[in-house]
Amino acid sequence: MKTEFLQNFKVNDQPLSKEIIDAILAENGRDIEAAKKPFVDYDTIKSQLDEAQKTIKGFQDSGADIEAVRKSAKEWEDKYNAAVSESNQKIADMAFDHALEAAITGAKGRNAKAIRALLDVDTLKSSKNQEADIKAALEAVQKDNGYLFDDGSTPPPYAGGTGTHKQQPNGEPSSLAGALRAKYNL
Image (cartoon, rainbow, N blue to C red; front, side, top):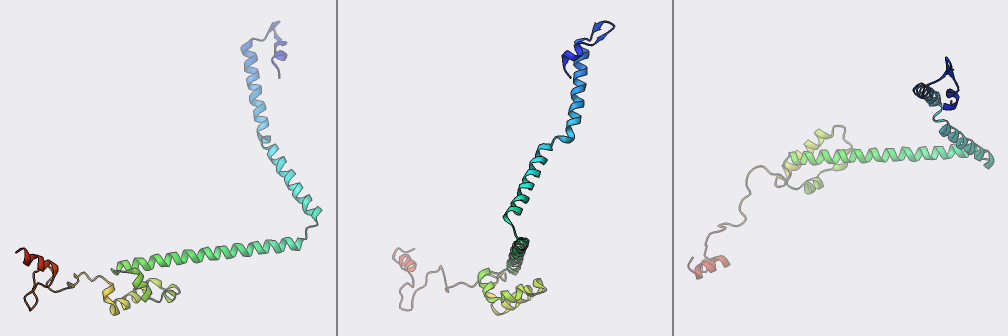
């Protein structure tokens, strides 16, 4: 609807006022937009339909073998299943590694790599009750190789009399520090 159309209308021999014409045009615009709304995606749907028709035509023109398409689909499905299986295995391995590291840390292991080398990791991975089996295996390693675990006590000193001035039986100091102390009367 156009403004000129409404300006030609008269009520009691008087033309419609500008406010009335604007109100009528605004309402008409809202009605038109509401009517267009269901068809807003018409162009998108039309382009999708055209694309689908081209694809179908391409299959028909190329003489595509349905069995070849099925075989290709089966190959892709097999690749997908292999990828899913591989990723599930990686996730299970990561979960096992985390559980083993946590158990070693919980048992106060000093060197996780050395402790892990003493464990039969493959048997523990395939175990049905991994947590209990890991704990039992760590207890066995701790029993046989207690030095790999921190038992809370301090280690013994490595050399007797460390830090004191000792002399050898012939009267000479036993270390460089001892010799320097003797020389400078410290």
